[in-house]
Amino acid sequence: MARSSSFRIAVFAIALAIRLIAIEITGANQVSFGDGPDYIASARSLCEQHSYPDRGNLPFFRAPGLPFFIAAVTSCHTSATRAIKYALAACDAFTCVLISSIAFMLFGRTVAWIAGSIAALDPIFIAGVCDVRSEPLFMLLLTLSLFFLLREANALAGVSTALAALTRPSALLCIPLFALFRPKRGAVLIIAAALTLAPWAIRNFVRYHEFIAVNNAGGFNFWRGTHPETIALVHEHDRDAYQALARHFEFQTIARTDGNWTRRAIGNIEAQPRAEALFALEKAWLYWRPWLNPMEYSPLLVAGSAAFLIPLYLLAAIGLWHRHSCLCPVLLFFATMWIAHIPFEVVMRFRVPFTDPLLIVFASFALVELHDLFIELRADRRLRFVRAAADVRRENEARVVR
Image (tube, rainbow, N blue to C red; front, side):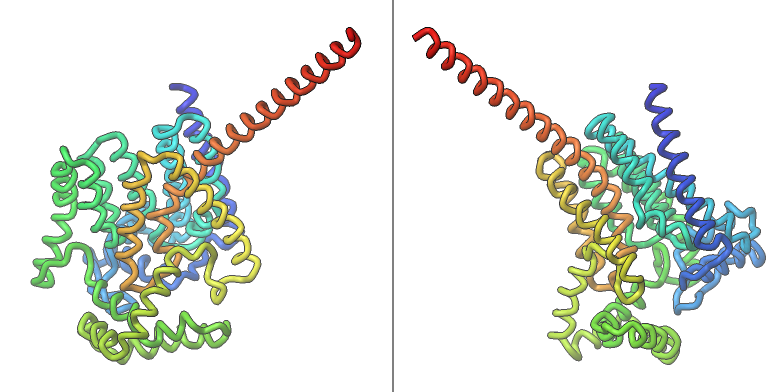
């Protein structure tokens, strides 16, 4: 028990130290991610005006999880960017501990050590805490849900899944999905999640006179994911032209479009059904693309991400194949979240919190399995060599006797 606690502390400390160093190197007080100022502004509104804003820099209000988190960890000193990033780094370091704990429950201590080490060094995870993003908090809550599911703590799994949904609404689909994994106690999970979501949903109903579980961004994101300019953006291969198209969409196209987002999205699909169908297939690939967007990152970072993610995918596939009991539920989880994202805009950071913690666990299991196989083959080859040498010796002795 003491060794297990020491291991978790070591994973947390190493992961946190790496992330804090990365934050300082990239600029602890710098916010360059486009949504970052919006999250901070929503937190400031909570602290100063005691109300949550009806919209931010985009025509919807943000999911409340990260703004409330920012207000809490900064004690309403929302301009303390370093404190926000440090708190997100702590979330990510704790996610590394949860990944190693899940690996321990499934496969034992050796796999847990490897999984914790990979998570601590994961460059995608590290990059996520170097700006003000919702991913670190969201991934922590979602991974905590998986941890509680394995521990059969269904009520806590429901609460953590609901808190994840309040940070990013895409996790709403996980509530019934996770309940399927616990057929005898799934109702407990759903009730716990519903009670956690209820205060915010009631607040939305009172304020907007309609049922909004988390926020009102769904229609806009559907429209954005089907817009011709989004298709053109994905197909652009010149970096300058890509940046110009992105700026035009953000500052002009959105500004001159007024609401009715879902109707407009359906109109986009009806106007060019073949192009939209092909784009949906392309987004299915982009969800799993194992490298960063070459239009947004340097060739070195793109190559580095591919060097990390491609082996991770391959090893995780081997690990899942060798652990048949986990194959169906994990693939169901992956496939459900994959398909659910396709109607919207698809980027790597939307996928990572759902898939990468489990990919790390099963890739670590595969590494141990491959290592054991290598040792077994090496021992078998040595045994064959010894037997062959013994046969030669006996043959030589027989010749001498003759």
